Length: 302
Image (tube, rainbow, N blue to C red; front, side, top):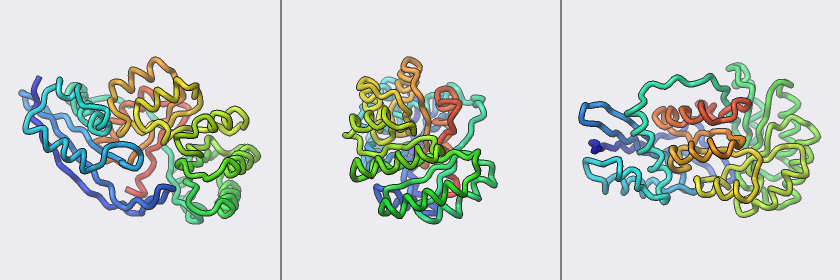
């Protein structure tokens, strides 16, 4: 089948800059795509790349769209290469929206992303007032002694029912730093999981830590696309997988793999718009671990 193809680039400044180990992120760039069939039905998708996370760049995605012309076929969509994972996700999601425009999602809990540093000590109360029970805090941005002290203060403030996720974005510099964090996390017993403490190439080390400490470790940067996710599974990772579906590649292939592997998956946002978010939540509703909050409580930034 052939569809009329249109695309609409966008650029949105975050209300608050997002600070991670990779740097400060001020603006979200992406592309809304639209497929129209011969009856006039429309399906939308979103290309929301994060090049520093491993996807194509915004400029590459834009050139890809410009090269397609005014029409595209299902066969062409199926042949989008793995070099364009965010494009794969967007085009397949748009097709899915054409054929399944109305989907009932299960009720899911959401995670509240805290600002980095000392501001987190004040910000968590806003999330709690909005009935969030799971919080995420990024580390590896300031020196470790400062962040460990802030962690102890934050844990002492959070209600006992609250869960805290710590995300290093692969930014801890030494094994000693990982050990310090895991020891204090084990001691408090309040950390739901420790996300990507080391860079992706240190999977074996993270496997070792996951077997020695009680606090679970989750992979994120290590599974930036579907091929990496499958590789980590083959190499023996049976811990938590934080899946950024909007940049991981083909949602059809992702669904197929997750149905087979039966792994502990948490779906997470890449600060996409409502178009991309709806497509990811559709997947999360079916595939994300129902006992864990999904990573979409980020509206205070977008």
